[in-house]
Picture 1 (cartoon, rainbow, N blue to C red):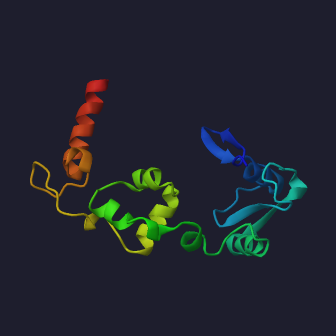
Picture 2: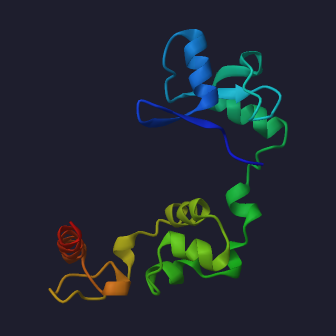
Picture 3: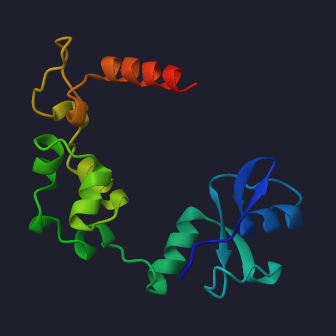
Length: 158
């Protein structure tokens, strides 16, 4: 099923269902407020099909109707079949690259890294030409040199 319909308001993307509810109630929604599609069809944006609820209430509804797996991050994807930690720390692949390589969503890779307290600062020592620890494997650069190179390239393009 396709994602939510969006519209552009003052140069910013906004989900149509949130915009419709905001217009109906006469105020902007808080980020803690969720617009729930009562019939489960995220394309049915009829005002009578939309309700404003808390994140907790929203999660509870979807846990009860089975549309959210409470163990999504541990049961849906077989992390044990891959050594994500090694790919991130030793091979220095980004979460996006790991995601493409093993066909697990990038958000799930990031969840795995957070859950296991694996940080970019834990990567094996690879030195930049300036002597600092490199964090960009493809170019073996530290953040400072990478930004310097990026800004230099940006100026040459103009």
